[in-house]
Length: 384
Image (cartoon, rainbow, N blue to C red; front, side):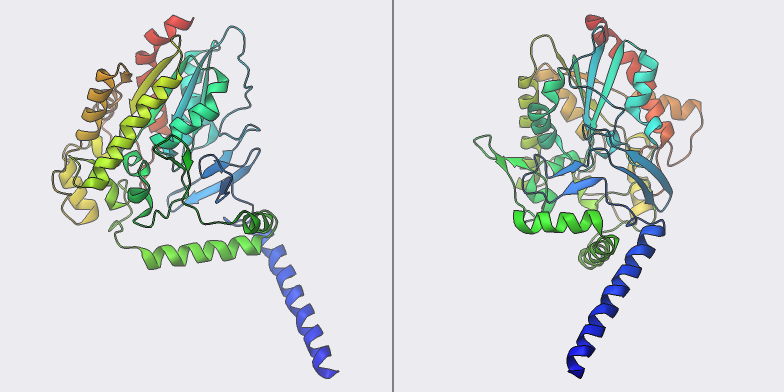
């Protein structure tokens, strides 16, 4: 009897402790106070990662914090309708964390800035989402964005998209990536091992339990630190996995050749989805290393290591522009405009980016909008 009473007392003590921790964690501002704006590991997900419609979250990095608001359609954008607004031209922007706007407030986004300066006759819809590569953006366009019937599809490409586009480059030999890909026959491929039954149970806990979110976050931090092999030597505007910089030069092995093949195959596939009265525009995102006077020296300074063999910061941009020209894809080149702005305003490193990562600051988003405005206006004139 005493043993049973002791067990009951222990159970209620544990329950009370959990309840108190839940209350405290929900009251103290922290990354686990509210559910994440991202949905991951859903076995039915189109892309492997997506926004939670209607979510709002304050996100933080070591150098800044910002608020992300997701609209009812599931994008970091103002409220939109799938149906066209009569009399308005429509631009759909595809991209990764640069277009999502990691590090900046909603109003500071490139898409918001561009829409503002283009005026009331143009909508600029933001379909940017962290982690996506060209493969996922092509899937996204076919299954979601095409229904919005944009006049112009602007795809923003950053160098780490090459590794995103191959499951081995992205997730390692075991393909440990949540992203979706295409099989040779065009069907969607997922390498996640999650079972749908446990996913839905875990989702309930993740949404409703701050303690569960804390445990998940702690587990993720421990695993990432345990598995970390190559990390930047300092808080840097170049912060990416060192592996991503292997894209800056001729492919070194079969994995990188396969990554580039997937990249170019996806660009052609995306173009094929468009009708004759739509325009596909490719935009290569300028990063910190692209605008540096001496990229190799900057790389050595920040990572305390020599750049990869064959290091060439112009390679991604040159290859994509040549490929686009061959296949009739329109390109806009923001790099000269970024460099001109840096020179005229005497900007110092990290120029238009955050000090703790490679994402644009609010200034970077504004400069991008101003630079692309001039190049997009002749294309937009066809639809006005």
